[in-house]
Length: 194
Image (cartoon, rainbow, N blue to C red; front, top):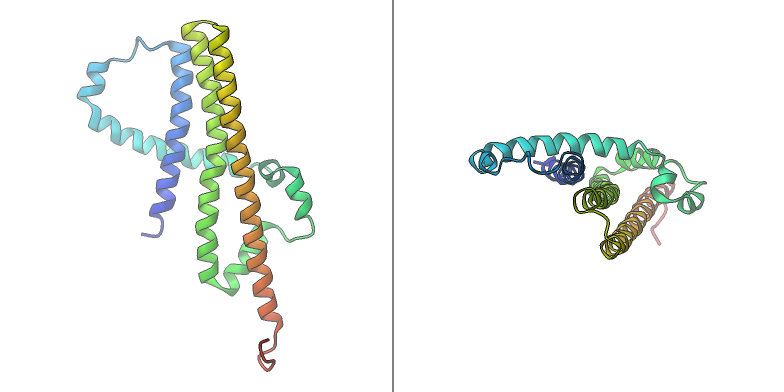
């Protein structure tokens, strides 16, 4: 029951991946090969197949994005701010060892950040795939090109900003939880609490 939100988030990421893969396929091969009668007849079976495919792509894409260096995901300014802190993994393990309830709450936030982080990359890829699709299927139109570039730039900038803020917030929450638990461990049981 505890893993259902994680599975759901990975399926969302997987459908985002499928969106830009589908746009790339349409860019390369066109859309005349899609048999609408077949799709409508097999809609239920295709839906279950796509759900499984989306989960698989979500897991793969999440692992690929999480393997990027932390500084590249957050932005190097945020890494400079946390350079004197232990690694995020070490802080998570310290929190887990000292207080599993706080760890579970942090884990929910980490999962939300993973969704944001993967969505940032997927929306950038969806924007690029959509641009490629429009050019290959409809030709070059300066007004359409300008509009798509503007909208893609605005959308990707907002998602990158959101992703960076999400990562910084997550680091601060992890840091504060770790420091708070360290302070509680440093206090001796005989000392009165202030």
